[in-house]
Amino acid sequence: MGQPITVTVNGDKKTAEVEPRLLLVHFLRETLRLTGTHIGCDTTHCGACTVLVEGTPVKSCTMLAVQADGQQVTTVEALAAGGTLHPIQAAFKQEHGLQCGFCTPGISSRRSRAPPLR
Ligand code: FES
Image 1 (cartoon, rainbow, N blue to C red):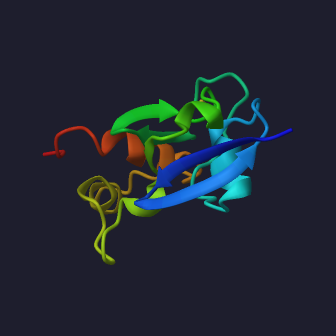
Image 2: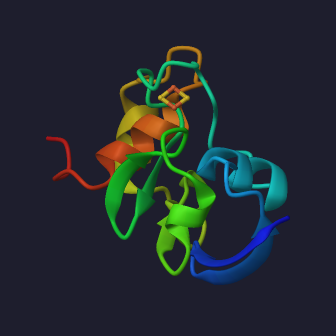
């Protein structure tokens, strides 16, 4: 039996009925089809799944979707506004800081809360 939750994701209010054990990362990727948030490990170490919850970086593989009920979640899909890269994304592009790129969404989300790079 599912539990109803309402989460504001990237400014849009989303309501769904979820299993209480569903991780936030799976809610974002599979329920909402926001696949920019990646799963890189099974050990909560890599940070590829990082999103902002109420503006605080959170590994979405360590949080249940039901814990996000009533909260604001920002994923990498919302970092670039109006086709303009977020400063951290622009810095990654400028400095070729991508490596393979798989964990870049999580790093971008985490670093978007930090002061701009110089
Ligand atoms: Fe590696 Fe979440 S997927 S920390």
